[in-house]
Length: 331
Image (cartoon, rainbow, N blue to C red; front, side, top):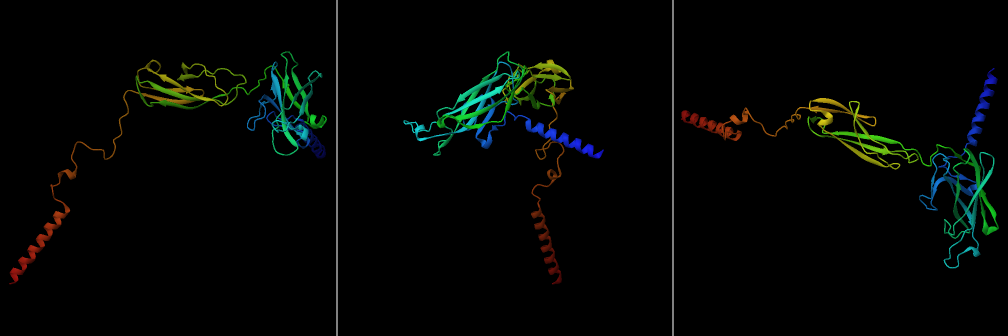
């Protein structure tokens, strides 16, 4: 029995490892061909080579119908003496990128792109890195499901020789998919000033709102302020880009708070604070040494000019007088 259990466990682990190895790479992860001869990334934006932001990868490889899939590709192309621009002296790579795949229906599809005239690197080596951007348009009525493909690069400077080919990659078409991550408005730093407050005083409430998601299902966010569980204020609709934030301000008057002392629970976006409304402003706390009034202290009853030095001088005078009087009596 124990051997059967161990065998079953081994089979399950094997299936899990095999499934993991067959999982397509995340869109944010580049996919490489053998020896890193080619690199491809599934994107929503590709602006050409830029050492900082050459492309914007898709966050989960799911595309809506009617959108465009972009594949950013890099590869190395051969540069011979005849492949140098005679006017500028720049090297001219000539690499072609081709995407070949299968739709969910089993039908094939292709898309291609050529490298631009400028390479990524301008060193003296004969092989220059270059890039291409393949665009594949998804029709509004195209089949929902898994689109499987791979990308290959060939070098026109070497008679169409194959440079590299990626393993199979995947993107998915779904009705509710978004090109960018969905919005996620988050609230923080709820503050109330003044607090405590005097009745009939205007109270200012602020809160910070951040879109920590994206703009995939971009829509406005209305910020509501509740007092003791009842909605009393609402702001105009906010529309924040991903990672954008703003401060929302509310002002509460006697219309919302009334005119009698009370305690209120202020709530915005799941944050809560307590507001104390008082009849009078809190008494100021006395500052030590800032001055006193009323009963005089002991120092104020002292004889003017009578100090420690005066006392010592008087005592010395009495001693001298007593010594002289004693000498007179001895004579």
